Length: 466
Ligand SMILES: C[S@@+](CC[C@H](N)C(=O)[O-])C[C@H]1O[C@@H](n2cnc3c(N)ncnc32)[C@H](O)[C@@H]1O
Image (cartoon, rainbow, N blue to C red; front, side, top):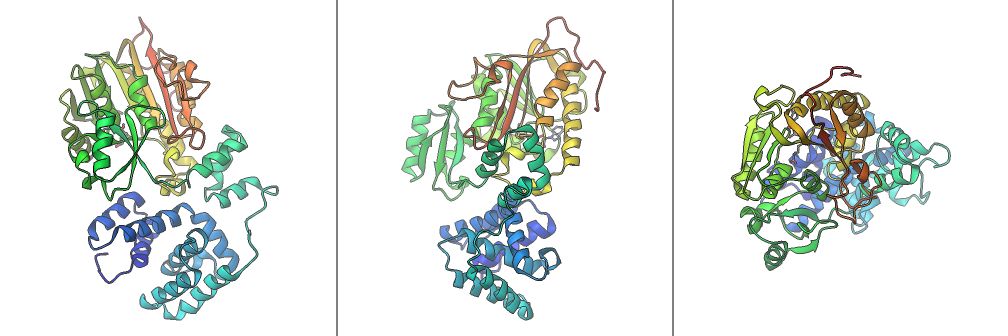
């Protein structure tokens, strides 16, 4: 990967091979590779990023088109050739600035250079036929099979679309699917108000030629773009802000944090919500944030040191195991649990191909198990915040309903905590599902639950793994 002679396209193809043939995680591998390649220009970096992310997010569409033009089906092709064709087709179809002839010539050159001379004619033929063809839209008809149509058009597995269509109306599903391809130009950040105001930070960032816009909903949120990497921004190293989506910032608000509160955040890494909580405590109280491995805890610790808070501590703890010392101790428990992540497929496209119905089912069980354990840490009258970054009903409202049937908690209105501008008729009921394409955020679910006064801590034991 460090070979300087490799072109940007070759680097992109090597990354795709690792991700698609060996199952590496796209965002980490891409960042790691770009970091190692210190001779690349800013333009090269954005070209490689676009090629890798674009090919991944459009994979099902690309394979469908390739299968319509090639006698050999994509899954039967050699891995190098299959990914070379996918990446080249992505450029033909979605990158207008690259001339078709250049795409075809480069693909042929790469096939030859990497020992596939005998297949360079095949590569050339398939790509040139697609480039030349005027058949236009070869996708399946919307009327004939709308699930298949949406699946191919928006490169999202059919089972996922079938499930969403049971939970959301057709237009909403289309908006959710479209939102994943919106250009990810900006990064949303949360201002560390203990170190600077939003205005001060914006001025500093602008001095470094970074473009800054206001957040969609919150004063502490800014949207920035035009920087090479976070580590290259002085204000980031000084802990003046952290990267966080606005949906996730809302957790700090709906928790209703008061000075001197004791908060336990049971699944905390890398520390987004925990650090926001510590800031909202205004130097008082204590927030204990936990995660399951040393590595995850070290990620939170790094962020605590960078942001500079003292009313927060980390603990390595498996949230499935009951911590007897914490029973009925916390004013607030934050349960931002592991989930299917389908609200962030625009940022991490590999999630949509790796998730399955079975895995979702397993996650529901895990979430219920963790909720049953950690809810016992909430004091009588205290608050449990449950959240996920997914749009899957079973993991969200389904779990809340199950939880309330089996635990002495009730939902509490979110109206007093959330910005007026944020629409959602269920706010008053105590939960909110944010949907990409409808709300200007990631897909995210949040619920605020209060432990009943006079109730016994813990799980009533009626229906656990249903
Ligand atoms: C959605 S992420 C948390 C994000 C975090 N709250 C934030 O705002 O930055 C879920 C976290 O749960 C952690 N996790 C998974 N299983 C766990 C367990 N059994 N006990 C504790 N943490 C767990 C994962 O390591 C992951 O960091």
